[in-house]
Picture 1 (spheres, helix red, strand yellow):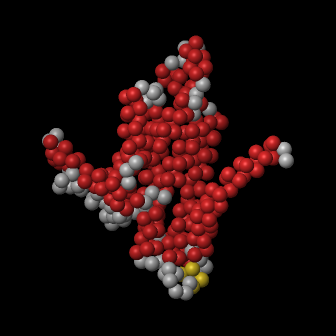
Picture 2: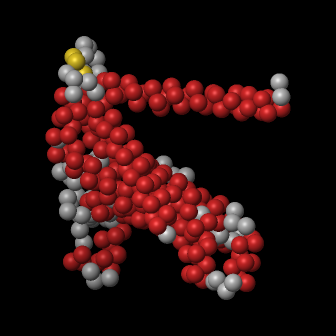
Length: 293
């Protein structure tokens, strides 16, 4: 056996256990869920085949589409909140001085915390009676701005934005810092010789060099946003009046609260399809914009 063949065999042997686990616990459940979507089933007892009825009901359900729109809000918070803020912080904190390392660790800290803890923290911040946000508004003489931030259907979905952004900046910050540090030093020297500094250097050299990393971050944002569940469930449980209902909480409520396992499976399959379409659409737009540029 040649060296190249041994290397390939070693790589395959190393990847095989992870691939098997991924197939068993990710890919297979997706197909099983799609299969259960063709049945009326309460989780126990006999399953009744009903064809596409569950999927048809999903498409006609107003709450499902409201959940979808709310998920688009989460996508917007992630793509236009987490990514730009993380990129800006990465540019500012790319050096390795002690205080920049300290700031990076502080920004990453929310990722170490449980989603339950984060949800409880922000629940207390937004609390209408004892919350620090309303207390600060009172202190600044802005009592008329006080709201029931999580209990008012008109503002609840907007109030979800800051916790979502704050809790998930850390990984993208580390991702962007790694990308910036991998830019060859010769590029900086060439930019200085050509007089490219400041914003010109940022937009003409730095961002194009890490564009692939930005695309990966956006994909992670979209996929993560469409399966967002724990933080919203802790803070609002999809309420009030379904104003913060997401696709994942909608699927959970139908599956485990009212025991419509077949319908919940159809919803979960729809989430997978929507995720793939949004990711494919974002990739098409980013590649098209790059080609135009």
